[in-house]
Length: 194
Image 1 (tube, rainbow, N blue to C red):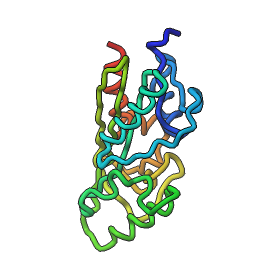
Image 2: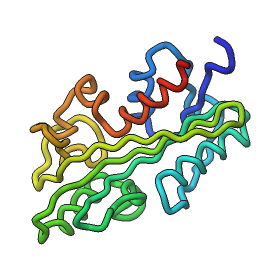
Image 3: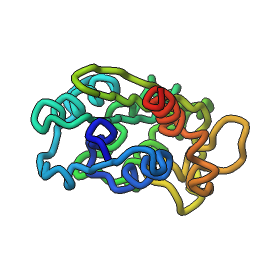
Image 4: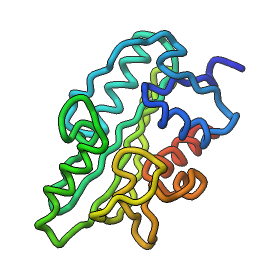
């Protein structure tokens, strides 16, 4: 496979790797950080999802010289002025714990009637030194009781607008085309196929 069709996905999150590889199919070769020998923990220190995805992609491209795809995703709850946002993965502190994150969010949201929220993903592609960014947004609402065993993060308490299942109750085939990451990846794939 030619080098231009090989990309590193800048993550140690196996769920993200599996999800993206499933969506990409066999069109492109996807390498993980482990595959390229990167053991570094890339600190997400930017104040926006776009900034964090760019920071991760640039780190890998600059050090390893491989075309890179990086993303950052967050849950933005309207009643909480966009929290947890860029802090979604570590909302309840370090180390990152999805159960604790959901518990903190539900506790903070208890006194609000407005449970509307959006999942948002920003993907950065650095290909031969050129930077492009792609965004995916899915609106929905937060529910008080966790439902479903699939997905990860806040999936068990998020129902997309117009649907009755949480992301965690959906199969990958149901979730991927409509998820924030799926929408951003679709834009990325459209671009890569051109």
